[in-house]
Length: 138
Image (cartoon, rainbow, N blue to C red; front, side):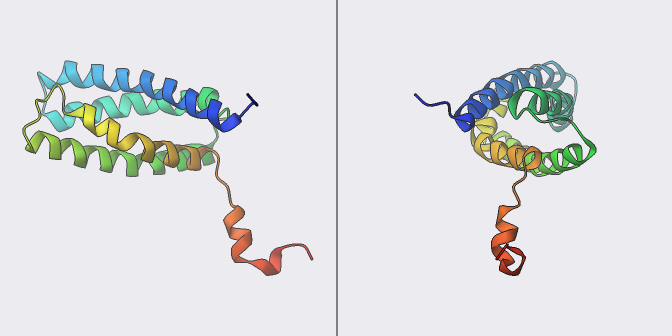
């Protein structure tokens, strides 16, 4: 089998995602008995976000943390958070027990999050060149 960097990147993403999910879920579960569920979920998200930024840069996508990466990563996670908290509240509304409500959220959001984070940390602007043919070499 040939060395496929994208395949290995995906595997590292799954490993990182598992670590981050355990952190998020552990914090959520611990706080959900004392705080509003949205506050507990958001607190877990914020703590796991910091770990996610570091692991995603150094391990998953093997990029260097920078101000630009941080800004793009934060932007991708604003979208990620809004999707997650919306789905989380939907599952709570539908009667999924609070201990299990985050699980379907993460399953739904996983592929979206991969694309958001990958684009944030490894942006490709090739599509811009296709839009502006006059800038391509002749």
